[in-house]
Image (cartoon, rainbow, N blue to C red; front, side, top):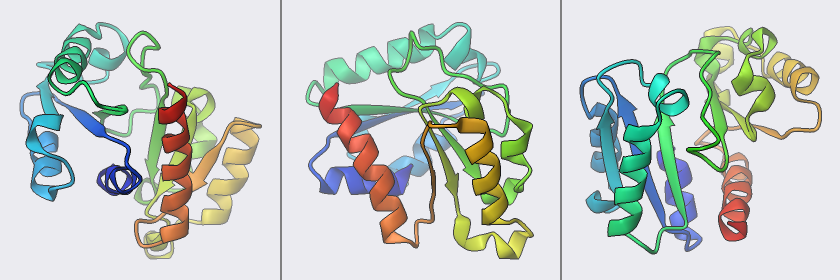
Length: 182
């Protein structure tokens, strides 16, 4: 997310970030230390329970975080709501988000797309991240592509690496286009 936010900012798109952790704001602290955004555009939410419930079932804590962020920073074009983990059943409530990006880490294995789940089949975009390390972790980018083609049909996905400018630019271009549409 940090590299995506950096690229969007370079394209003039104002971003904010809301992160979800159970008891801490560690993820927000990581974004803050990266220097990619002013501190006032970053909100850490400590959900007190499963962060996935706070993006799907009772979204009130995230809704309040986004509402407060937008009130303080009214010029934002995009607000990212991050909820980590490898839970294939995690979904974002459409009451909370306009677009949903599911990010898969290559290190989790090329089996992930074949397992399905709403992130794979229903998100607006799947991003397979860290493709540059696939060989080192025994994963095949070709298998990711094959299984995502089968699972997603016409829905988009991207295979990326922060070390590959073209792949990151394609994701930033799509998200930037979404931001300008509303």
